[in-house]
Image (cartoon, rainbow over all chains, first blue to last red; front, side, top):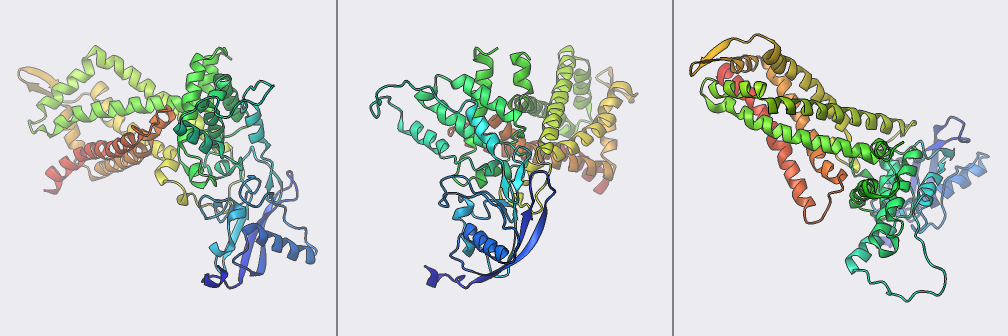
Length: 260
Length: 229
């Protein structure tokens, strides 16, 4: 409730925003002053206010990625004050509210930083490298025809829950952004383990992990050193256990698959 | 590329090599620590000198010495390749970054800690291993046989305050390295299970304190016993 919020007064903030014309241009942090920001606003709404101000001043608005604005789509990003999706745990940037900041704060906003995520403009990065990892093996073969009965294939509840937890990955790339090594292993492991745990994923199980890891390396992502910053910053709480499972799957597949 | 070289040049394959060699080096630490505990025996170094003679001459130990060197070489080489690759992934760094909010210092600085340990290792090998194998230590008779008096080399080295300091700092680096490395190696091997992982993590923490503390106790013991007191 707004009335009960001790921080409910409108805020004046200093923003340091990464501006970059295109992927080739050199970028820099620009400083903007922004006034009368309601604590009830989401971070992205604050960015909208900034852009309205900039338009009135005849300045090119800041480009940033967003879509559903309810934490589902994985489109929003932003490295806010040194953290992926900002200081709050378990949320995307669109779910971050301005009440987490105080009047007079300086907020530094940067794009995801990783070679495989080139900056397209300002805060927008090209995250299609993750799509290509997914395309390399993150699918199952399904027969066409009639719709199968629900619960036709029995799956233990614990396995179904674990697979579902892995499947909640929204592919936002925060894991890569937060990782010191720029590793995409939390993402890849969520996709691999989700399918490896379920009966439907068994057909491509070995080839999948081999191809997805090969694509991950080809895209130029780093190698995991089990730091855990990815899982700590993941907006949907993908667990580091998935990376252990990815390692297990990969080692097993390398030594036993038919792919010479 | 054959499947074998493809596997071990992949990011996960290299991690696997670092993990396996790391755990092997942990087993070496245990043997080295247990053997060297004979320094504390208070028998004027007789059992330590006999033990040193055995370690330097036994064919099985000499063979394992080669395996040990290979273990170090692979561990360092693979970690170096991975670290260089990881460093190149982020050509533009964050202007403002707060990794301390989401991870441990030791886990982010394994390369730095490993480098400190390597420097320590070179000093350590030069002073003891090199002198034991290729130097001319004094001979000492024990039960009628002459042995190299390595015990005196150790004791005299640990009378130098700066040498003791190097050892203590080296062991602190080793402790932090093991604090992340021990359980991390199991994770990399894919050995993660809710029944065993908590025990592995607890043992890893225990190992990372007890082993370096045991090694650090040796220079501190001789320095405090002979110089301070």
